[in-house]
Image 1 (cartoon, rainbow, N blue to C red):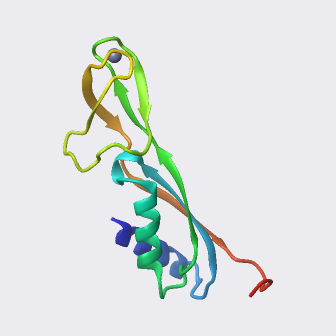
Image 2: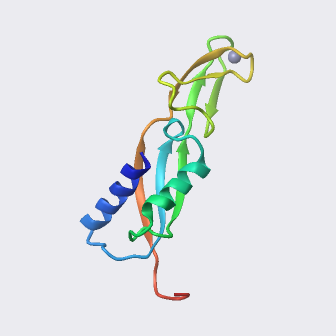
Amino acid sequence: MVQDLVDGVLRGLAERGVVRGPVAAVRVRIGALEFHSREALVLAFSALSGGTILDGARLDLEVVPAMLWCEGCGRITEFGDGVDGHDPLPSAACPGCGTVGALTGGRGVERMEVDLASGTSGA
Ligand SMILES: [Zn+2]
């Protein structure tokens, strides 16, 4: 998944004629069920981007939460990171009444924007 992310960003940059870094930051909108933890995702991104023009770029994550609509009490709860998206039917317990229900949403990776480092100050 992270390899696809890195490849996608690099491809997008190449299409815009950007073939040289440095890139300051990559902003990604990502579903909460697409990853295990921010820390792991950031680590994987920095490992896979090493040696590319994304080397050293900061990964800014905008997490799209998964939603739980509780059948027990009707409460709607948003879950950010920390839910197990590798479960084919992700579920979570309602914080209100404890009823376990299926999560919806929180999928997809989109809107990959890139901030190019400007100038050469500090280099
Ligand atoms: Zn409930």
